[in-house]
Amino acid sequence: QLVLTQSPSASASLGASVRFTCTLTGGYRNHAIAWHQQHPEKGPRYLMTVNSDGSHYKGDGIPDRFSGSTSGAERYLTISSLQSDDEAVYYCQTWAAAFWVFGGGTKLTVL
Amino acid sequence: QITLKESGPSLVKPTQTLTLTCTFSGFSLSTDGVNVAWIRQPPGKALEWLALIYWDDDDRYSPSLRSRLTITKDTSKNQVVLTMTNMDPVDTATYYCAHRHRDTPSTYWGQGTLVTVSS
Image (cartoon, rainbow over all chains, first blue to last red; front, side, top):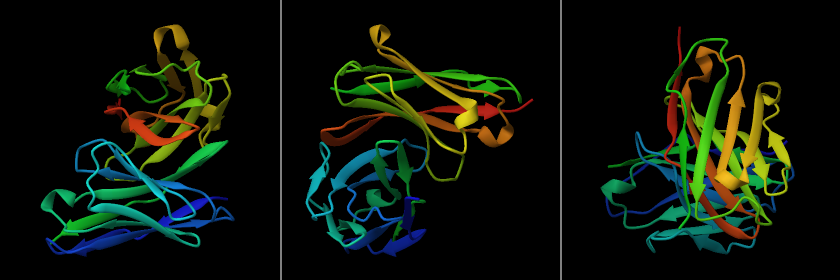
């Protein structure tokens, strides 16, 4: 069974960097994943897709401060030069022919 | 430009059937590789995938909700409809539809619609 594991919370200071981790389990370590950002009381926004080879594709208008990478079964989202508007919940998500799966989300607090 | 918008009742009673419509533009659900999903989010909780429909009418459902869900499409109207039977207060959530294409990496989200289940 495919499960995406995320830490529930993270915090970092204004101007610093933060890295989120999404771990694929259930034998799906070669799957690509997508990262989505969700501000309070707003709908999710697609950020990027991160492939198993570490390449990533960003959605329209996503700043260069956002990047993706991979190590084994882990997929990362890194945000540099943190801004107050980056405070949000970040979800990873993957898909197969028969289903979509979401991680539990990581809530980012910008200090 | 791809856009999606969910519509439906904001309030349903327990045991009733919920019908939600996703109206979209910027793509056709008859195009090879296109799929549209429904996802929900209870207040303060994480996103949960519900159902998926493909350009070729194939459909998939969350195993935990399969018996209550039906997803259909009307290509001529650019709409995807989700029905959920036997609604319960725990089904109170914001319901989203989203678009993906097999060969492209992006996901496009609708704005969501809040459904409250209460007598």
